[in-house]
Image 1 (cartoon, one colour):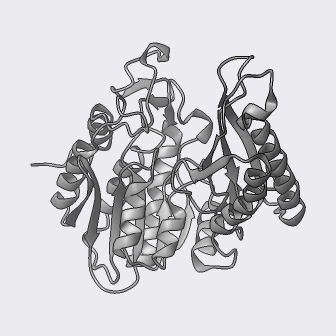
Image 2 (cartoon, rainbow, N blue to C red):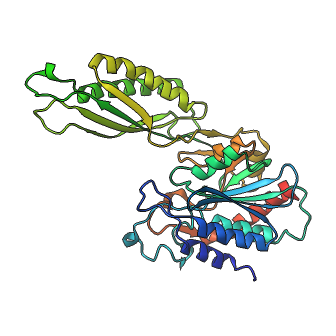
Image 3 (cartoon, helix red, strand yellow):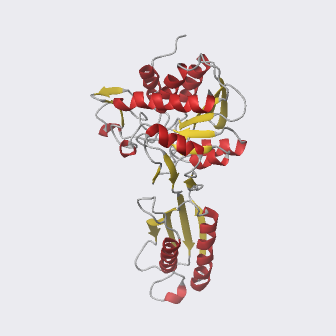
Amino acid sequence: MPLPSLKDQLTALIAAPSVSCTQPHWDQSNRAVIDLLASWLAELGFACEIQDVAPGKANLLATYGSGPGGLVLAGHSDTVPFDAELWQSDPLKLNEQGDRWVGLGVCDMKGFFPLIIEAVRELLDQPFKQPLLVLATCDEESSMSGARALAEAGRPLARAAVIGEPTGLKPIRLHKGIMMERIDILGQSGHSSDPSLGHSALEAMQDVIGELRVLRSQWQREFNNPQFTVPTPTLNLGCIHGGDNPNRICGQCALEFDLRPLPGMDPQQLRAAINAKLRPVAERHQVRIDYAPLFASVPPFEQRAGSELVRVAEKLTGHAAQSVAFATEAPYLQQLGCETIVLGPGDIACAHQPNEFLELARIEPTVQLLRQLIQHYCL
C-alpha cells in the first residue's frame, strides 16, 4: 500500500482522537495514532516496537538501522481536551485556512510525525551508519506516563534526541520543572463560641501559607537564572477550600499549589524543606497535616550549552539555544543518556487554544532541518 502524502498523514492523525486528561470523562486511548504511525514507518522499513504503558495507552519506538549512537526524533501522540464550540472549524478535521493548517494537535504536536517521515523517506536509499529512532509517547499532556515508562525500561539509547514540541524552529536547551502539590489539614470542629472546643484547620493553614511564602522568598534569593524570562523559581498558591459555616471552628482545609523549579533544584529536596516547615505548624495547632504531590513532578531540564547537539542545532537554525517556561519530556530522554534539545515548527502561543494552527511556511524548513540532523547523526 503506498504511503499517504504528508497532508493525508496529518489528516488521518488529527481525525484519530487521542485526548489525555486527568479527568476520566475526557481521557482517551492513543492506540489509533500509534497504529497509524507504526503502519507508515513499517512501510518505510522501520522495525516497530509498541510498548503498552496502561490499558489503551502505548508508546511507539520505530528504529531504522542499528548500532550504537544515532538520533531520536521524538514527540507525544496525545492532545489536550478541546472546546469544540470555540473552534471555527471541526477540531478533528485538518482545515487549510489561508497560509496555515488548522486542527487539534497540528502544532502540539501530531504535525511533527509526518514531517519526520517526509524528511527520512528521501534518505532511505543511502546506508545508515547509525540508527534513526522515531519515538511517539502517550499521556504527555497529563501524567507523562509514556516518557516515564520509557525511562524506567531503559529505552531508547542514542547519542542525541530532538523533541518536536512547538518552539518556532528555535532550539531550546533548558526549561523549568513543574510540581503540583496538595496540603490537607484535619483539625477539630466545634462551636465557634468557645475556641477551646476545637482546633482550627483554617488558622493552621494560614501559618502553612506563611511558611510557604517564606520558603518562596528564600528560594528566589538563592536561585536565579537570567536565561529565563522569569529568572527565579515560582510558587503559586492556586486554590484553597475549607470549613462550612461561620459559627463552626473549621475542621478541614486543603490547599493546592504549584512550584516551578529551575535547573539545579531537586524536587525531593524542595519537598523535604516544605515538610520540615509543616511539622512545627501541626504541633503548634494540634492538627494533622498531610502533604503529597497531586502528580509526579516533571524535573527541570538543562542541556549543556557546549554540547554537540546544541552546537549543531544552533548552526543549522541560525538561532542561539534558548529557554522556555513550559515543561517537556526532555528530562526523561536525557536520563537515558541522550543529549537532548526541544525543537519544532509550531508556536506555543496557539497550543492548547481553539483554532490551533501550523504555518505552511514552516513545513519545508522543518523537513530540511530534520534531513540535515539525520544526515549528521545517522549517515
